[in-house]
Image 1 (cartoon, rainbow, N blue to C red):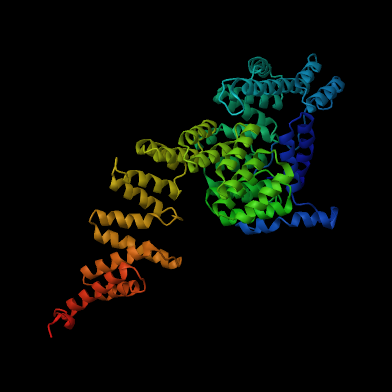
Image 2: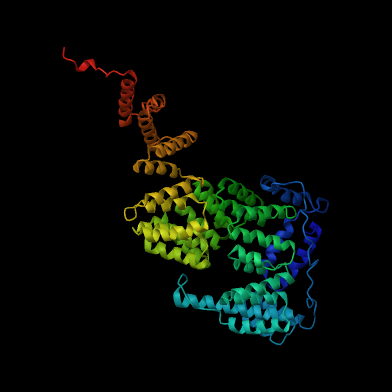
Amino acid sequence: MGTKESCRNELRIAIRQLSDRCLYSASKWASEQLVGIEQDPAKFTPSHTRFQRGSSSIRRRFRTNESASTPIAGVSYVSTPVLEDDNDAVDSDFYLLAKSYLDCREYRRAAHVLRDQTSKKAVFLRCYALYLAGEKRKEEEMIELEGPLGKSDVVNRESVSLERELSTLRKNGSIDPFGLYLYGLVLKEKGVENLARTVLVESVNSYPWNWNAWSELQSLCTTSETLNSLNLNNHWMKDFFLAGAYQELRMHNESLAKYEYLQGTFSFSNYIQAQIAKAQYSLREFEQVEVIFEELLRNDPYRVEDMDMYSNVLYAKECFSALSYLAHRVFLTDKYRPESCCIIGNYYSLKGQHEKSVTYFRRALKLNKNYLSAWTLMGHEYVEMKNTPAAVDAYRRAVDINPCDYRAWYGLGQAYEMMGMPFYALHYFRKSVFLQPNDSRIWIAMAQCYETEPLHMLEEAIKCYRRAANCNDREAIALHQLAKLHSELGRLEEAAFYYKKDLERMEGEEREGPNMVEALLFLATYCKAQKRFEEAEVYCTRLLDYTGPEKETAKSLLRGMRIAQSGYPLMDVEHFPP
């Protein structure tokens, strides 16, 4: 990685170039990384340095190596973003007019102004304006034909002509990196993935500061083999790309290692902190995720991006007051953002108001039809409302958007299980567990399917419960079920082993309940049968503290053990005649 100063200079130039081409999301991303580089304290006011220092606690908490502030790697192959016709004055007046039209979302008007301009910069903006015009018309047709949430085969009508023109420009060698990015985007939407990958690699190799191009390339890397086959030049932007790609491929530890490396230069990047939170969320480290998001909100109080994930954590932890505060906060900040609607939907779901929750998830989807989380969460709400057909439809829409979303496959399994179709449920649970093999909930759901009457495959259920027990079973189901199943199958030694482990876990968590009573009763009976009377007596003595029938059972077991130990029958004088 280059020095902090070289990264800073590259980003400053790139931000202007990206904004000049109306690639505003890429420009915003680059600007956030620019501010994320630690500044020279001598050049800034105390208030500015205080703002940056606020993020450092997260960096200290999650970094494993603090020794090097700027990690050393390969040298950037491009020192500064230089484009040959950035200062071309021939068509600059027309370009400025077209850009102003595009800023006002008058896309066809912008393209028309540039119809006779031939510079690479003007050609890109004209093609990009046509692409956006096609996207706008596509959205309008989808609503007209199918409604805001309906399925539709409507396509961007400009794609064919754009593909033809951009392909010709590429063959002639008269296309710039931004044109290559747009060409890759068109190819991807057409489904020509191999060529799209090749073109996007050409784009990022020649101009690595366009985060939009990296994001599109990342979405085409659905396997580690595909990722490893990319011929990417060495640049610090490649590390951002790899960190994100690893996360999408569920290589969370590798992703975390990359982000920790990048924090050596981008010490105060809110983007990196949010990505670390996402990786920790996938690893179900909710406490750490909550700490990161609290810090993010302190540094960036009007942030809405990624806050839907924070709301998922608060929902899972049942932190009602914190979720209520977050929902109120995003409502006041920007209530018509899809993320805001999703957060408010989670809030109503936690309150048990599932109809209101669905209303907000639907609102999120009207704002962004491809908002994956909203489809999945809406499916969960329909499951709660026992509306399984609607739940199945929502989950299917989610997997259509992203076939690698394990939550949607898991939801489909749950829905079919509710409909009494365990074979279908197992099919979807298997898809889910393939994508998320360390989630105990999915293994438990599969085991419960195997236990149902139509299947009654207890050996398979035992295998699944074992996997769940090895995956940090937070719901504390697997050990108890393993003990019960082994007991049903007459494997008393194995049953005793799992009952004892379950008992130790409950003692460690200071939990009482019917599972503890069941474990104590079984272990007392088993130890008595094995003539381990002292151990059995300990379990029976603990049962005497309860008031139900288990107390009488424990008394009976104790009397039986005393008979066995004394060698004489127990005489109850009350039963002798006077």
